[in-house]
Image 1 (cartoon, rainbow over the protein chains, first blue to last red):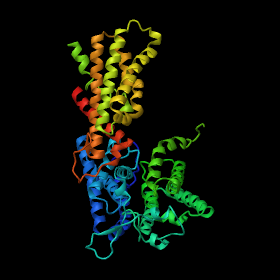
Image 2 (image 1 turned 60 degrees about the vertical axis):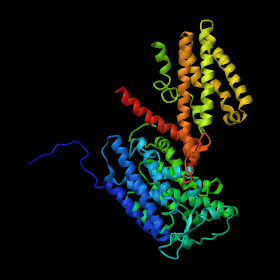
Image 3 (image 1 turned 180 degrees about the horizontal axis):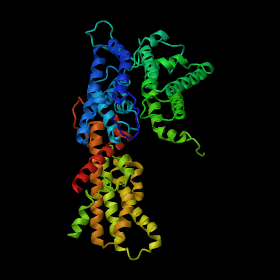
Image 4 (image 1 turned 120 degrees about the vertical axis):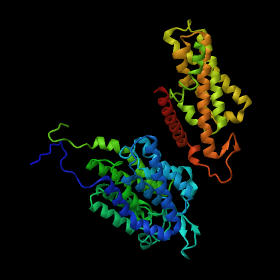
Length: 318
Length: 198
């Protein structure tokens, strides 16, 4: 009999980094397909540009720093896909490419690569673009539904931007429109049902932790209900949930294992902070949308949350 | 030979901004336009050279216990000179630089050179050291503000250098642009310095 002597670990999960990344991309597909169908060919170009830009940037950085090129793990591709999903579909493509470059270079590689980044790379790329090109990043197109060949679009603000300042009811956009993604917005955030299904699959597969989305969901609903039922002119909780990037952010970005707390208690804290920040930025802040900044801000707090919520080891002293 | 080394080290090898990371306040705050960067750099060169020379002359007379206040008084004198000079001759530039001209008084580069060099070295060497450091600082500001003005406004010294197709990157004109470009330049600089020392 042949005995193999090794050190632990002896049992390995079959879940590899590669599998996780590609599963997330698969779960994003329904929303992606809808985005491409709804916004036509420009959304596809945007997706391709962002993906190529992030992947190429990653290859360049690995080559320059003489590290093994780990492009096969799909993390750069996922960043590109997520970045495309949070950008306005009619954004000039060179801006999208620049965003992809910034996302990987300043968002990930300068910190040492995957696993060391402080901020969600895709959102960092978007934050850069938002600060660099505020006009283009807040110009949303309504797709011209006349024909597939037409690339023309009407520019129009998102439901959040049009509705929030002087709100009454659900405004231009009733619930079913928001659910089925028949409203302007970022390319991947409009199709709410697709995002919910994809996110639930991720949670069921235990790739995403349910705590952060749940905490963010509860906080958002409770806080926005308080405003909705006590004050006038505040949007309803369902509008908060469906009209902006909350679903995409909470289900796919705030569940990124690298940039969020690793303790269970910390994840509740992260989700609650995120939900509260979204409501406050949307209602009282200078921007109509707060999901990006709330996730980035909570990313910055993650090390602190980790330290404060460290669980006590068995028999350990306070 | 020694005086040459004293002069040249401030330009690149011990560049106050890129190597010593001193004087970050003006470096980050006034580098939105190249003209601001040059003006701030020259103002610092003047203050640094003048105060280093004066302090070096009086270095044996300044009591050790009160050397910091003494340095500050001397530096402040020259800063006031520069401030009034700018206000009288270039009121527009002076307005754009705002409080950052008076703030040269507390610039770490200047205080650092007095403490580290001119209070212990003869006049000629102190003069060269201050000149080298000042020019190094100006060089850093020029590099940074060139990058920021081209990307943030598409202009250089107010003249458009990039064509109509260029969309200005607003972020480069804002504070985050200063941090980003300084960080990237520092990273590139460190890479080269590491290679050259190896």
